[in-house]
Structure formats: structure tokens, C-alpha cells
Image 1: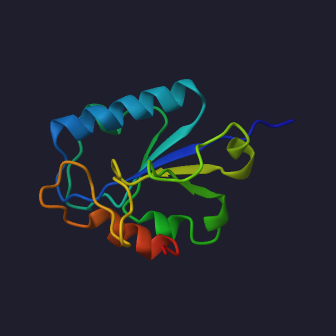
Image 2: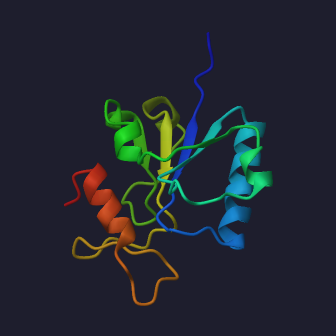
Length: 137
């Protein structure tokens, strides 16, 4: 039986890349590679220069397209990781999903609004992204 490889995706919603985000991305890529998985950094602006040590990491795929375009034909295999979800992620979910999507650190969805922790005031970037990709109600 051929093992199913998983992909972890971060939709990069900022025009810049700070040192903290670079460290997070590096760590996710390294840990994904150790597990035989792929880490995809999507929606990277074409004019954004990534640190050279980030670009050379095994298992990292840098995409300029957004996740809604990359996975347009397989949305049902994408799991949006939401800390406010009513159900916890389970081992069985590994059989249902091939792609696990982070949009940053999402706060709970209240009144159809999501926001990234750390944005004060919230800018609604995550909600704008989610509403393009999924049917948010």
C-alpha cells in the first residue's frame, strides 16, 4: 500500500515576511519533511524576497497562487484548521483529508467574522480568505 502524503498549507496573507513568520515557516517545513509531508506556502507575493535559507528547505513548496486556485478541484480533501471548530481534529481525519490549511492563527468565528490574533484592530484578512474558499455561514 502506497502511503498517502499530506500537505500542510499556510496562506501567506501579508505583503511582507517578518523574522517571526520566517521562523514559523522554517519550523513547519522542517517538521513536515521529517514526516514525509509537504509544506506549501501559498499566495506569496511575486515581489516578496524570501530568505535564502527558507527557499532551500526540503519539503517546502512556494506558490504565488492562492489555495482556492491550487485546490479548486479538490476542496473536499482540504481541512481548514480552525481553533473555534465544534469538533476536534481526530486520527480518522487523516483518511478524509490530504491537505491541512492554516490561514495564520485564527480566532473564533463570531457573526461571520474571523480575524488574525495580533491584529489590533482586527483587519478581517482570515475571514476574507475563508469566505473565498469555503461556504462560511
